[in-house]
Image (cartoon, rainbow, N blue to C red; front, side, top):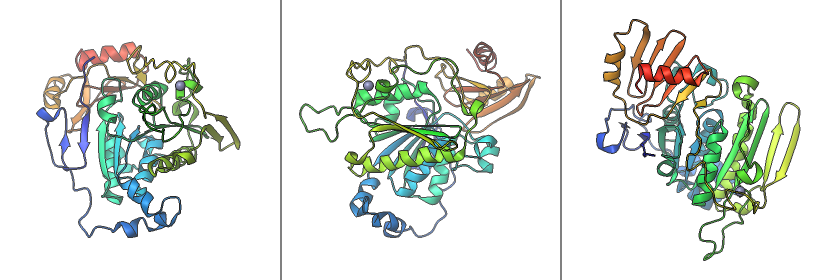
Length: 391
Ligand SMILES: [Zn+2]
């Protein structure tokens, strides 16, 4: 499998990079913040430093921390906002999707202009964070997290937060984190239900150094296989904004404990709340399962990319095609598509190209990934992709 670079938006320098550094096209982005005197950290973080669990030492540790957030939908936007406001120095945001009107009910980093422009979520989040904490360095990747790019995208992060809407990515993340001995935090929200769990894999050098914490169960210890059959999504079950924010709030608090070197305070259970029925449950994750194929036997099938299907996205009647990892020249693509009489509303910018044909809306990203809205038929979507974008 060939490695492919993600489209990357770097906070510094303030330019857009598309493709690999060698063939990068750059264009100016708006300045991240209006000019003005910088806000002193002693002012900005004064109330958090007063909290004994953080203090001045903890605040300093947060500034040097790097957290990756996978998915910048409802949970990821809340988590990114909370961590950036708390002063986590560097954030990597990874999301494959763009802002839509139906997101505004719960995705707290986005506004109506983002939805009108169909701005990619990772980039919209980066711009919004720059408005309230310009000191945070944000690396925004408009990409699908896949086995081919996971090492490149996640290597610099100390901690990884799951804010995805699918188990395929979570099992991939679990494989990667167990293999690399990186902590990650699972979070999920659907309907009025929120659940989260800390995964602290066995540190790599445990044979030589005392472990900073005893390992917990991994995702596969608790759920050996991803769920089969239809899984409820935001599309079928709906979602309350409050459930999302509860999951994000617990997840972020656990992250703050780890980042301030207090892993002993982290919860070692899978906790779930139903905010509507007031039901709660908690199951222990205190110890790894010795029979676990991932953390016990160290077999990483998801990381090897075994059986990766196409994905039907949460919250929308659409199929994502992500098997064609190759850069796309939007100008050439526009020139090729424009003569088709049945293609409408063709427009593009440096972030995406979009057009409509019949009941389908095509959204194409610079790395060749496409979202085809208006169908859940994978065969049809693949055929449309081959016909209009290229096989
Ligand atoms: Zn395990």
